[in-house]
Image (cartoon, rainbow, N blue to C red; front, top):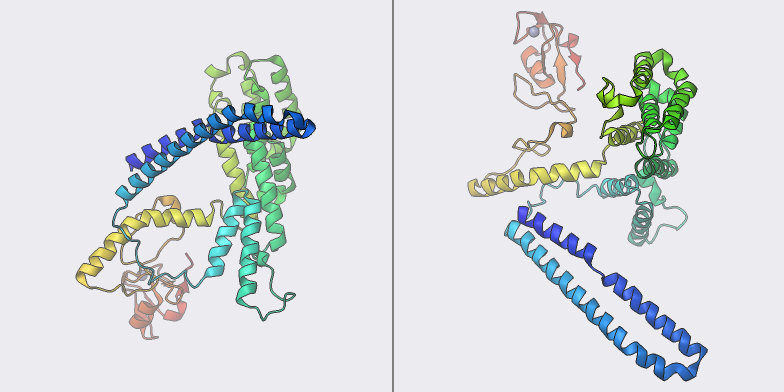
Length: 408
Ligand SMILES: [Zn+2]
């Protein structure tokens, strides 16, 4: 893997240093100005063309050199990739449950593009899907087919709104990250104050606190009395609304002002010198924004692709073993092996029935008996045969109708 990384870095460096495009642009400029000269005075044609010869030739040479370099870099990169992944076919797709779900996959891709702020790419993607659909069903009248944007429908939010929402999320994040401008984010959190507070979110305060810190530091991070004044007057204007809920936090900020010339050595130093503050707040904002839309903070496509990449080596090994032992993978919705995913990729708690050792499903949900012990529904029926029965884990007896379904 290190080799690939090295080649990748080298390639990137070379591309950055390359003057290929600049050379092409310069040559085009040269040719255009020569054309204008000749057009305005045809008598100059011979001399202008003669003057052109050398510079054009030399720029062509350097463009060709550049191309050669890029090619050799690409070749090396491909070779290092081949070396790493040689003779390793991907797992077969016999069990590919998603191949039937074209709409879901397209939707995930379109949503991912929108989340990344690639609005024109997303629009092209959706338009091409619509064209493809129209070609596949030539009989349907052009007026009736559902527009491709219906792919983006979410339960609570109409599809036309999704694009608009992501555009505004992207704008707010852009202002925040590129221009250190928190005001659009603060305005958004204010407009959605009720919904955010209902979620117990303190986004608006977090944003306002960072705004205070940012004003305090000023553009240049210079200790300037004007910055200090700007921060304090911001606090006087804006923090009143936060007082009931965030009194201790506001007091901290105000208390810090007493240490003003030497904040670095004060107990409040971490609030004012947190290097990840902007990233944290941007992530926090994205999470809250998406959750108000009923979406997860991370792109499902990204999560699925990453989890798939993590799982790939295990799946390849599994396939080899199954081939060698000539066994089949029988359970359709369950992998026969554990895939070690990072904790942030585990979304559902899984219940395994202690009696049958089977994983609970929608058809066979976990059931809690009045004594508090939980077994799967099928085990419950098998043990009780619809009569009072003794819990397999404690002396209590109960009737299956008293058992309650558990939702994980
Ligand atoms: Zn029990």
